[in-house]
Length: 73
Image (cartoon, rainbow, N blue to C red; front, side, top):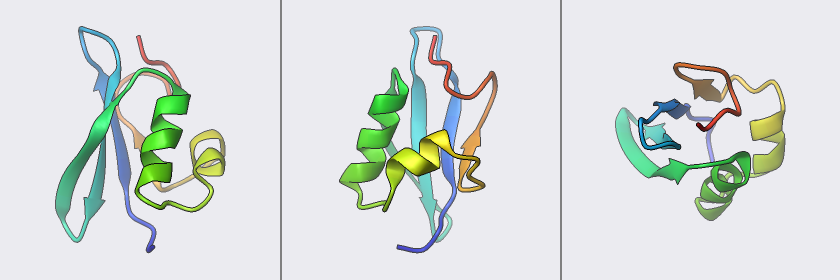
């Protein structure tokens, strides 16, 4: 799969962060992550290779919007 932007949105008032993948200009919501394990599972389910390395590495593929990376509440 080509490298595509994965957007982890700001923390919602109810907790968790919406995770969106943008493919060919179309945004698809993968779910709401409440921890890094959720984010990794979303990426694994859509066939992203090495999701652990993407989440915990210094990846330019994941954009964390609003707040600090890896914070969910």
